[in-house]
Amino acid sequence: MSTVSLSSGVRAALGSLSSVKDAASTAQYRLSTGKKVNSAVDNPVNFFTAAGLNDRAAQLTSNLDGISNGIQTITAASQGIDAITKLISSLQSTVKQAQADNAANRPTTSGTNASTTLATAAEAAATGKSLRDVTLDKALVDNDGTGTNNAAVGSGTLPAGSTANGNLGIATATTNFNLTIKAGNTTYTSTSLTATSTVRDVVNEINKSGIATASIDDAGKLNITGAGSDTLTVNLGAGTSQAAANTDALTGGQNAAFGLAAAVSTGLTATGNSTVRSNLVNQFNDLTSQIDQLAKDAGFNGKNLLTGDKLSIVFNEKTGSNQSKLDVQGQTITSANLGIGQAVNGSPLTGQFNIQDDSALSTMADTLTGSLSSLRSTSSSLGASLSTVQTRQDFTKNLSNTLTAGADNLVSADTNQEAANLLALQTRQQLSQTALSLSNQADQAILRLF
Image (cartoon, rainbow, N blue to C red; front, side):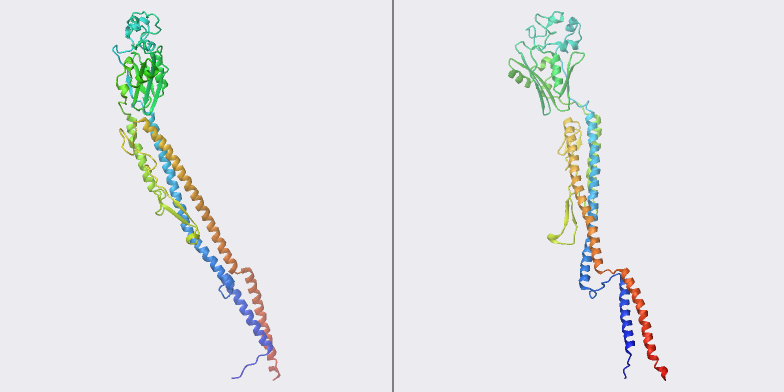
């Protein structure tokens, strides 16, 4: 088989045309793929570097789903705390409503004596005053030294040296007086009463205590009412010394002079319950039950930070000690954990409080205030965690975009340049074809010689 010989001009034109065709094919491929490095053959360094950057970007992007779930879990818990806070505010309103109704559960006593009142009708007639005013004017001691109520006053004549309408039958020798009032854990002691003090002074001292109120009614009787619902004791003591008077006051040695029954010394308790408070028991307990139920419903995707679950949010693609993550430890929030007991009418058991008891209501009011502070602290902690996770979410998105952009810079083609190159190569291809045609025409000129 013979070998075909081509002229140098034709061979040069063919070589140029082939080179232009290959360059045009490369330009077309880069335009179609958008990359100037499509395999390791094109540029090993850029190809593998871009692959690593894209791989990390993909791993970070896959973490965004977990981060998003973490944000929703924290948000659900935060919304749960906001709702529980509103329930506790409703509990506070219920307690205030109960505290406002207190007339039916106050320890109350009314003094009596042999003459029914601390003043006699004869004394009132002799002085032209009411039984109430005569009683308020009565002195603590026996002004005439007889040790009994002054009959002479009843006739309108005061004994010599007397400055008050009668006496309470307390001996002249007892010139020191102590008044002791106790309600719950609060005790008030007065040593300001003297032998010249009157019933009016005693009433004023009782009212000054802040834990009981006293008054003399129109019948001349001493009435005492506790300022709260705690067991109340009111004791008057007298003696030749302040110490003796104090000892006497601890047992109510002079209570009989006011017609006070022995129960005042041993302790008075309320004889009735507040109907309003009784009706509020179910309302209060229903609200506490809703706190427990709401906390259980504040979960997201199987995680509930209000029932003590722990949430772990992973931020990067690494493992072990190099892994970047945030652990959010939840708290078990229940009415019991917040210290909120169930309301009852009467003697409470563990985890309950007597709604009829003012002290118990006051303690519960303080507990609710403390619960709000605790919830605000938990909410603040969740808010800080949420802010951190949202910041990491934005950072991860931006970093993933940066990695992808960096990878693209290494392998992506400049489409404007490649398009210009292709256009130029197509022009060169046409010129190469023209040159090849001209070379062939030069060879064909020889045929015309034959």
